[in-house]
Image (cartoon, rainbow over all chains, first blue to last red; front, side):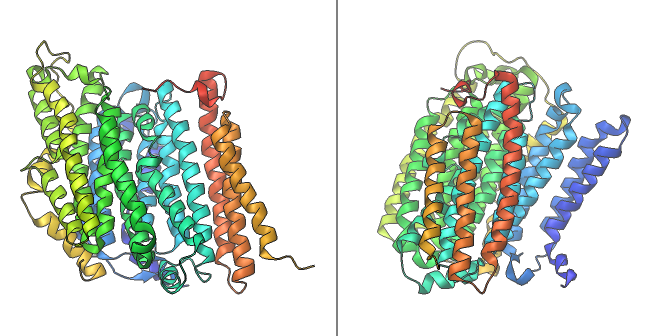
Length: 486
Length: 103
């Protein structure tokens, strides 16, 4: 075996090395240096993020084609890294709290392991590597959800998460075993694609595809498979909730696209176009309708993230142009959602308040937090000129550019839902700026990490739409990797 | 006596159905976990059967099964650790009593 192949896995090696450094530092440092762990990890991870943005992708297929690090995969990894960096910044205060401080090393280590798993998921071109990546991304997350040892809700959320996660991966593997029967004896994406394109449209293939959509749909919380989302998001520590809602969702969406378009692209219009059509409409609509009646901010963000996952999935219907738009949408979604979560966790860390009613009159005491929250809500709702508007426009454009009448209807339904979503996003804005009465949260100064995280998110919300560099970056990455768009 | 592929596939399908049925109807978390193991094992069995009968010259299904068994063991370990935590705070492992968060 040629060990120099590992050199082509540079992003994975960086994250693995970082994990080992943090693990050794956490294990062997004295009590005095323990409080250095948070800034140490955050700064090193920031450097790793810059490195992953800057290093060129090798573009090689290694280990017989099991692993590919093309430009699109590398761009997606860089985007996820930004999300994790912001999560690290906003959780710095929480990791210093009395309850967590003694085991904050575990928090960073588990997050880095799940990130490593997501990298494998993104780069895998063989179903064995994909399953290993998926599992190493979802199992440590269950441990993270149960991280608040002294809070009962955290355990309840964890048991709900682990049971549904194992159920979904069991269904995924069952579906995969049916696909394997039709694949000509190989689990490589390329071989399966050839066998599917030349084979018949048997019932086994339909069942296998439905099981695959269900299995990955659980991770993405698409609608018939979304029931765990609200409880887990509410019970988990806020830092983990924000990580679950953006980073793990982004990685799963990219892997979903690669599997369905590259492996099963040949049977798109025959078999799974209508399945995804129904799932997307349900996801956007049900997520919106349930978000309206939520009073707890974390539950509210859970349903909002379900409906956003529906918009992300629109990219699957539109080929490679859809992939570029989807990556841009995920990037914008990362800054918008993490901006909202940074404000929520700042207020929770200081006062322990999580209900939407506690945000009444927030602008009187905390104008800057109110400002950031308002921008994040506007961006999530898609109000121009913020980034969320441009990401929605691009993903709608990519879907309509396929020219199919049915997909025009899909975009119309998504547009109507955007208007519905305005209602509940503006409920938060109304609570902050318009509701009469005294503020329920006293004035406070948020910690340095939270402030940097909020400023980064606000900068992203304002500039990502107006500066075309980010979209060009996604577009060029996809074009270099997979060729002609549309 | 030569058995055809069907003789092996039927038990696998029965295991899958029993697993899904058990996961939906059982209210004890450990029983739900056992049902999940049934589904996972039925998928593993499928891989081995298809490999043995359809593609006897290759090994990918068998290798996948080996990895899937290890992954299933890891999943069970994490799940049982979390269920023990629940047992400590509730005194039982009934999924119906874990309903603090419901709106």
